[in-house]
Length: 212
Image (cartoon, rainbow, N blue to C red):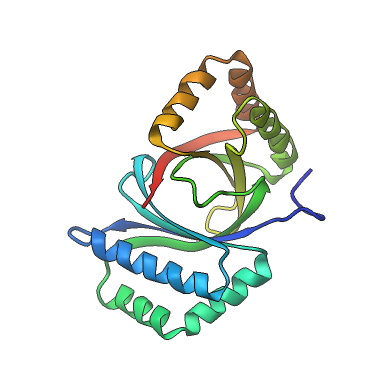
């Protein structure tokens, strides 16, 4: 079943940016400042990260988690009125530190994203919304043969590409991510589940990011 009725379903606001030459530190500082404002306005968790491998390697990202859509929109509105956030926005236009994509909004599809995890591997599928229930069943089966709280998934709510499903794998370190990949790649049942997933949608990109 989809994450609706009675189950908690968090909302997220994300933004990604490619740093301009010699502007990485400035971009990170601005992202951290913006996330600080979001936390003051109601975000339950925040994350600043850098993609170290795969899709958009070298990019920075920022994300804020909210209890629901109403809280997310109220926080975003309040942030836009905040003097510090206004100043960051002005600096973004007057003296760009990166080429940004977003912000965009997503929601939980399966479990919930742990923004505090040191390492995320994100696998993005192009998939029809009519396949989501089947996708959730596959993720439940993957979770049964994985360590607790390893896998979650989210779908876009306000974004340029709405036919996407992001599967997020959470790890304590790069070493634990590598160990998981070594062990799971040897399991026939995991390979069969990936095969089933490929029948529901197309894996279009994968990235490996670390919290900074």
